[in-house]
Amino acid sequence: MNKEYLSNIALRSFSFLAISTLLVLVFPVQAARGEIAMFFPATLPKHPSVLAQHDANQSYVPSKKTMAIWVTSYNSEPGQTDSTPFITAFGTQVRDGIVATNYLPKGTKVRFPDLFGEKVFVVEDRMNVRYNKRMDIWSADKEFSRQFGARYLRMEVL
Image (cartoon, rainbow, N blue to C red; front, top):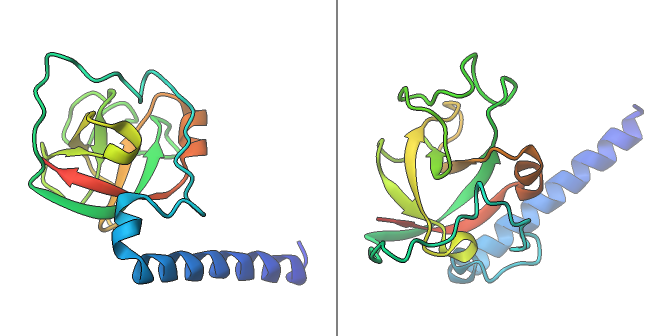
């Protein structure tokens, strides 16, 4: 690859990061609510392993804390995990509703209401130590994770 091409990619990446950061700093409430959809579209492919229907027997649990956080999605692949891709950092089997984070203790329940409604996720995995204040949602579908990308979402801690 030539230097001009790489320079162009670096400039675009920096511009995206700068604009995203500016939007979050200037409009923090709107960003936390997910109202700034210019760079983070809320449309996702509907996949049953991640977008489960709300259980009518579950009662609604009010949140203790609401905040905005970067959220990504990962799969059980050796390239995205360690040598045991189907076992979490706490020794449990990966499954729908698992999130990885270094920010909250094991067993913490969270929701992402702007994308997943009342679906509850549980912290049962960890991320690389370089990631702080970030969440990673487990998915069985590699294409879903690829399309999910990185999103700045409102998170409710239960």
